[in-house]
Amino acid sequence: MALQYKEYGDQNAPLLLFLHGGGVSGWMWDNQIPYFSHYHSIVPDLPGHGGSDEVTPFSIQDSAQGLIELIEDKAAGKPAGCKVILNGFSLGAQVIIQILSQRPNLVTAAIINSALVRPSELMRKFIRPTVRLSYPLIRNRRFSKLQAKTLYIEEANFQRYYEESCQMKLDTLVRVLEENMSFQIPAGFREARGKLLVTVGAKEKAMMKKSAKDLVKANSNCTGVIIPEMGHGVPLVMPDFFNDLVERWIQEGTLPKACKVIRLND
Image (tube, rainbow, N blue to C red; front, side, top):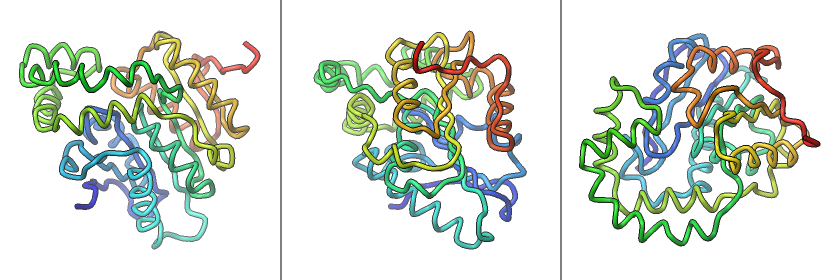
């Protein structure tokens, strides 16, 4: 089964691909799609998530390859030189890094939000036994409410989140978490072209901030920024700020004044 995706906006405009985080699906971008209606937006559900829940097993590398094929197919009918822009969060941001590594000349710009690139082998070892114990709680609405709160999911989206959580298979959940926790910057990332923006929230864990700095260090085309007063979830919590940030970066290569640029010598 092929990845499920939705299309929005102007079919003749630059291509803008949105990649969601783990445990949710394309609906996480509902506050972005209307704002970017002047683009040809593609919003896939990653393997094992949402409408692509039967596309298994999940892997970041296979996801990247499938999306490269989708991008090439959608860009084929556009004028030569038409922009291709990627925008991903968390797990989706890791997939973007993999896409850029496999096809360094594919995109014009990319926004890589809250991507973990420092593997933790110790934590990875505990994923399967921990998930096996906690998996039955997924169908407990009270537990799901607590999980949704940590992911900054609003009440209006809770039912979709709950239903998709219930449909996610145990092996898929384990696989997603293992892929997320073992991901590191591929060698090919240093060759990636285009304007690359790396973002991380000021209140995210130290490992996430170190990951952002690692990405900036790995590719001279990267600009890294820390978003003030923000944890892991800026597109959901601050959609207006996030939309402005992305649009400025795409159009002008500039950033809102509130953002703190990551310096490698800090």
